[in-house]
Amino acid sequence: MSAPTRILVTGGAGFIGSHHVRTLLGPGGPERTEVTVLDKLTYAGNPANLDPVRDHPGFAFVRGDVCDPELVDKLVSEHDQVVHFAAESHVDRSILGAAAFVRTNVLGTQTLLDAALRHSTSRFVHVSTDEVYGSVETGSWRESEPVRPNSPYAASKASSDLIALSYHRTHGLDVRVTRCSNNYGHHHFPEKVVPLFITRLLDGGRVPLYGDGLHVRDWLHVDDHVRGLELVRTAGRPGEVYNIGGGTELTNRQLTELLLDACGADWSRVDRVEDRKGHDRRYSVDCSKITEELGYRPRKDFATGLAETVAWYRENRSWWEPLLAKAAL
Ligand code: NAD
Image (cartoon, rainbow, N blue to C red; front, side, top):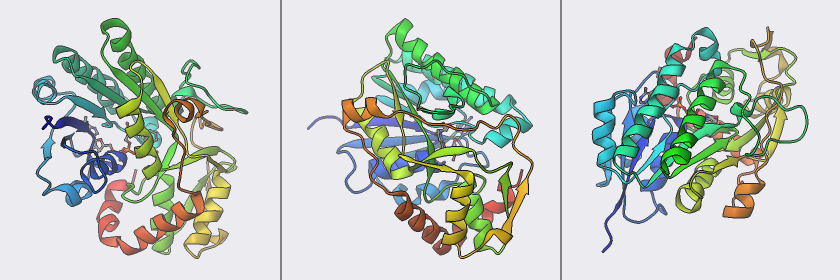
């Protein structure tokens, strides 16, 4: 029998990383796969997200920092592949202070890449964001576009993408970069707009809408994102960037309307607040590369995905209520 594939997943206690780990080790996941999660458990990391796989014989959890070179070196040496999610991920926090973003997102990525190079890691999937391309008024960014990030968060992610790709070009390391649009789904920390609005509305509270509410985002269900990521990990090409989108572009006003509706609330619960500094008007990624090369297509239609997400938050108050204090900026 072939040896198992040992995958180191950084940031695997967060929203998307934990979804990936539950997928890898859950029913229908790839055969003979072992996963170690390396996660610092910042305010955004939640060990409960990994409860469904905690007793899986192929699962291990290590609490630690991706910027810790000794720990990272040891863990990378013990694994075949790295899937790198760990990041400071909230734009508003990066506007309040960028130091943690540069440290974790840039230095942490370089620390992992150096270890991957020393130990000839067979595959390094770097999870990035559509925000690195910056705002686009019309049309959609292709992977060949240069990065033009605007927020400190996006700039730190763009920096990490460039460093990751440089390790492929310079050293031949098998690096694959994914750039996805805005994810939504269950287990999403209640600071981002979808879970923030749902939890506040379910609690009878008010929600803030930035500026004129006409900023446009593409919405991607986390199941579709993880499927796209798995296609890239298993069948993508080294040194390539793949956009992963959800195919549902909405203004924040349209999103708010849908969330109010799903939670049984109306516009009297919305506060119009001053716009976010440097707020990008629109993000949009062209997904023809991953569709044509790897057969990716989003499967979850937004209305169903949103209804399921709201239902999950209704039924899992014990998951999010303890997080509300940590979510406050
Ligand atoms: P998240 O904030 O929910 O989770 C991040 C995880 O990383 C947490 O578990 C946290 O504890 C961990 N972490 C943070 N700093 C660390 C460090 N120094 N060492 C080890 N672990 C650390 O983020 P998410 O929404 O799951 O995003 C995962 C990745 O996907 C990020 O790289 C993010 O930039 C990218 N992304 C997210 C979205 C989205 O819509 N959520 C969209 C595009 C890209």
